[in-house]
Amino acid sequence: MSNTNKGIALVTGASSGIGLVTARSLAQAGYRVFGTSRKTVASSQGITMLVCDVTDEASVKSLVEEVIRPAGRIDLVVNNAGVGLLGAAEESSIAQAQRLFDVNVFGVARVVNAVLPVMRAQQGGRIINMSSILGLIPSPFNAFYASTKHAIEGYTESLDHEVRRFGIRVVLVEPGVTRTAFEENLTRADQPMPTYAEDRARSEALMRTLMEAGDAPQVVADVVVKAATAAKPKLRYSAGKQSSQVRTLRRYMPESMVDKALRKFNGFPA
Image (cartoon, rainbow, N blue to C red; front, side, top):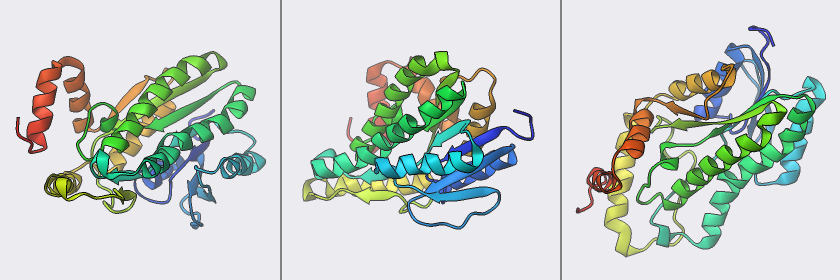
């Protein structure tokens, strides 16, 4: 692919936030971009928007067919679609946790399974899975969300080894806290308990404060473009200063020190 025509990119969850900015940045970098949303959204700024529900296998397969029909190939996939869940682990029903995993983990797997045959046939491609610093560290009142991101970390690392011989690479982008609409993709626990009310409220207030001071979505988008265009991609890309710091913290600090630091940061007694 030339510098001005880098191929065909598919970005899930591209109607707003990180996904939208990423789609625009990839278009500016020379990709022909297809984005997805759960509801109909008008195409704009070089992005062809398509409707897809990543929890529906038929919808995902139809999406890939819609891209292949005019484009003939898929060179890059950015699995960005996802939702959040705020609440203590005990406050979420198993059904609610399953719905979260259905979007954040199995939604990624559905898209990957649909595009891998295409990439194998064309003997190349790149898949970028959006992780998080919560794929590296725990986070009180985000237990199930953090679990989905830890799952994406393990899934991506394993998958990359399986498909590398076909000319396909699978990599992770790990954003820190990013300035997006707090309520946009956030679900609250469906079985709230008074026992956790005080700590939950403090954690929610902390999250709002962190998001207000967080990285702009463009920081993440720039890293995605870097991961997409690297001749020899790394497995992991930290997006933003906070992400790099957390990765270093988890890698080099003793477990007891990490535990102490996290409790202090979250306002919990030692």
